[in-house]
Amino acid sequence: MGKWDRDGRRGSGCSASLSKMKVTLSALDTFESSFTPLVVIELVQDVKEETKEWLKNRIIAKKKDGGAQLLFRPLLNKYEKETLENQNLYLVGASRLRLLLGAEAVGLVKECNDNTMRAFTYGTRHNFKGFDDDNDDFLTMAECQFIIKHELENLRARDEKMIPGYPQAKLYPGKSLLRRLLTSGIIIQVFPLHDNEALKKLEDSWYTRFTLKYQPVDSIRGYFGETIALYFGFLEYFTFALIPMAVIGLPYYMFVWEDYDKYVIFASFNLIWSTVILEVWKRGCANMTYRWGTLVMKRQFEEPRPGFHGVLGINSVTGREEPLYPSYKRQLRIYLVSLPFVCLCLYFSLYVMMIYFDMEAWALELHEDSGSEWTSVLLYVPSIIYAIVIEIMNRLYRYAAEFLTSWENHRLESAYQNHLVLKVLVFNFLNCFASLFYIAFVLRDMKLLRQSLATLLITSQILNQIVESLLPYWLQRKHHVQVKRKVQALKADIDATLYEQVVLEKEMGTYLGTFDDYLELFLQFGYVSLFSCVYPLAAAFAVLNNFTEVNSDALKMCRVFKRPFSEPSASIGVWQGSNWNITQWMITRPSPLQC
Image 1 (cartoon, rainbow, N blue to C red):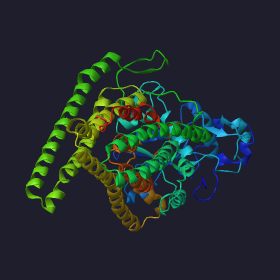
Image 2: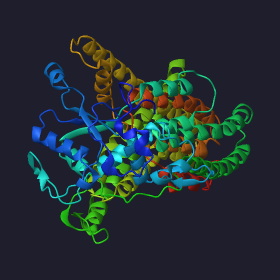
Image 3: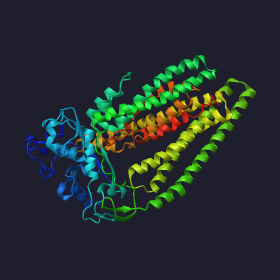
Image 4: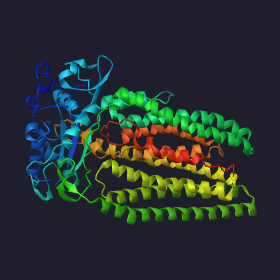
């Protein structure tokens, strides 16, 4: 984690003398004048002074008084606020001792000297590998930021009935203050800061040098946390798992192109391959997460999600006062509104598909009448247009699905995610694969199937690379130049490096999680496992795409988006379960070559 004090001094909470005696939270100092900022809180520009003071006092107050007992200061002092913008940016940190006690509170699991994995406790800290009273690197920076986020989220209302200065923002005992401030628009965002030195080292070992090598998954985990590390670990594993399919597919493509009986053998290999790679991944994933300590980490009690609303009442399980919403109302919304809307979208997707086939028929008829070279190129135009339309429809539907799932008012974030994944998966699966199934089982045109599959696969991969990485990176570079010019023009005596970093990062896009990344891999898995028996080069194109995807996603994480908070994970979540089984089930259906 490097130095804890910007001026090279250690905070008073980290002194060796304190660490050698029995320490309680009340012994911590929350008024250190200088500390390493880990998290930034941005308040709305016209926030009231009494709200600022109340929030500050709750963050720095001792735990016994209902505070988070963290370190807190504004980015700018009074003089700097008179000459600069961004007056409502605040830095949050913690002393080393506070973070160690926080690690115990959240249940972080670390490796002991006897090579076992156990939940960290401050009282037995010397039993853990790598711990030393003078060593600041026992906790990774990602873990420190996760601890601070946990403490901020667990700031709860006590006897307050409303947020000071905002009588419309009601509070009740036990309500998370951070979530209420976010939903009320008083806090704009909370995000962890990058460590530029550590980030540069990670980039050098990760993607800046284009060489064929394994990804530094452990280093990614140390900087971004387990959830991001597992995604890149799975991306790397899936890419290498595709290589045998690509190697076998090349001779099939070159030598037995029209011998459909031999493609049945390839389809059988597809079935075995798709099952084996998923089972092998589960074992490798368990090995990684056990080594990281998240496999045996106790799950935290899941709080109601920020957008959940209802009539205030007493939860019969927890005994806490919180919003209550009848389950039957949620079911009515799902079955009477969400389900018909999804079915309507599926119908519209099929309608667009039939327009695509009309375009294909028109292009084929034009080519047969003319026979020229430009009409042979025109044969690919309907597939390219359809591929672009599919991407647009997928993205528009995603917004609608998020709105509907939020409107259904699910209490827990896990329930919200499960319903969202189901909606998006069903539509994306039909939208991307319906035309291919129609060609295979209704039209039975293998030439058109190969052409459509190749065009859809390649076009979608190119579009994803541009939209997800290249375009955001270009926009971010433009903004970076503008911020640098503003900072260089300042005559105020400020820490320009820190100011520039915070202002730059606050304008970066927010990384919304690995959902879209896994969805892209899921669809790629479907293209390869379901249809590579007809177009054996599908696996080869997927391998080429994934080698560039590793670098573009790494660039996206390091330079395009804000640093996400670390989230302990024991697996790749819902994607490790039933979602991949959809394609596995489809593979066991009769092949178009067998019909």
